[in-house]
Image (cartoon, rainbow, N blue to C red; front, side, top):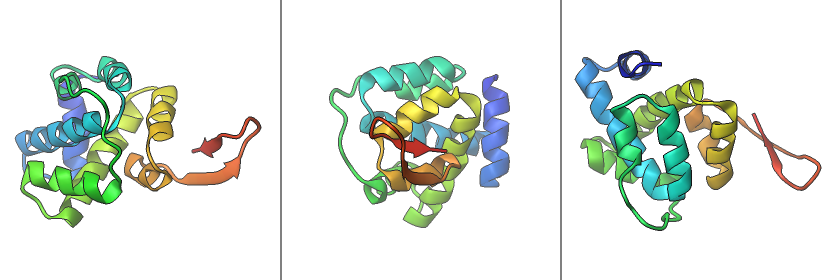
Length: 139
C-alpha cells in the first residue's frame, strides 16, 4: 500500500479535514508506539509500512518503556495537542489501519508486547482463551 492510500484510510476513519492532519496524527501515534515496543519490533513494523510513514518507527529510542494504555493515549494527546478521548479516537484510526496494512503475524507480534486492553485500538478483540502452549489467542 502506498502512503497516500494509507493516509486516505486514516483520514476516513478519523474523519479528519485533510490528508495533512491524518499524516500528523499517524506520525504521532507511530512515534509513541515505537517508544513502547522493542526496537526490533519497531523495525519489523516499519518495513511493512510505506515511506515516509515508517520514519516515525525508525528513530533510536533505546529500551521500550512499559507504560499502560492511559499513558499511551496521554502521550499521543501531548504530541497532537488533543484531549485524551480524542487521542483514543486518533489512535484507533491509525492502529486499525496499521492492522489492515501489515501481516497478521506482525499484528500478533505487536499485540504480544502490549496489554490485552490495547487490542481494540487495532480493531481486534481480546480472546482470553488460552491455547496449547500457554499463550493467549488474539483475534
